[in-house]
Length: 383
Image 1 (cartoon, rainbow, N blue to C red):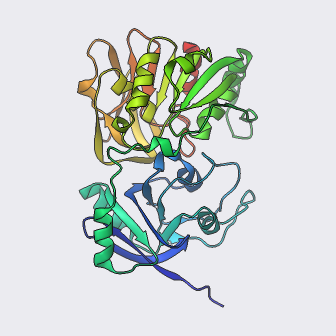
Image 2: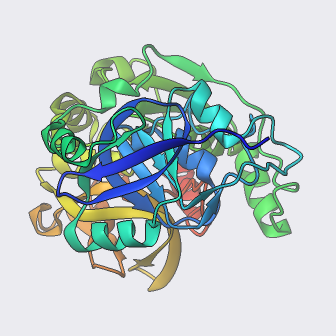
């Protein structure tokens, strides 16, 4: 007997509407419509806190074929507002999987829509920019849905970090990576073994929506990791006597969290600092720079970045909709270290005087390539 399907619609604020089939949870959900170009890694994308408030469309045509497992989570639950795919695979085939994608979304009250022309959607978002949107299985009136999308709140100027940060400080405990099973070469294994021998660097992670793999990398390199909420004050962080401070990734508009910027400003020069994604933007603002919203953002596992000191190109994992304005950074104090080869936006910088550096992309990957692992080694050496 054929399973009963439920109709669903995706409507954008500018009038574009797609009819498809709903999966996961039913109902009506709002968010910013964006796209991700990764071929695999949908579980990590779903659970990445940086996607809070966004309806994510995958460009790869079939999603869900290897299900969901317990090991590849990047936070405690999915953070997206909705999930858009060309074809949802109801057949799950992977020895680690313990639940299907559809059941996982349903369990966590996340709506999905399949059967739409994702190529058309992505081309539209690339041409006209990210849009406010709604997915619904309960209201299929096109005009009403367009108006609802138009009237829905924007993420610009909204504190999204408070929705994903931890509530109180905690010590991160997890077994070290088994890099042999991960397929790393002997050189890589030796690198991490050398770092482990230097044990017990005390690192504090300021959690603005930190992906688990950031903490996993730090632990694998011999660090003791304490995670603190985004509301933590500078003196509270310094009272933990860290050897280094990690500023994590996170969702939304960086200028909407001035309390984090103020904390970061007071930490500059006190301890070595490494910023990732939103952490990069926080450092830019704390140093007197400005940020701006990108037209459709950088999201996927194939973003080319040039490391300017050695002119080497890295293929990187990215997920952000805002960017630091290069020209706004203080001249003479900051050196740009990385640029995006697609649009020449700044992807990383370091401070000339202080042990401080940051990148806009995700060196911890998960999902994505591991070209930028060296940045964690650089952070360890700065401590």
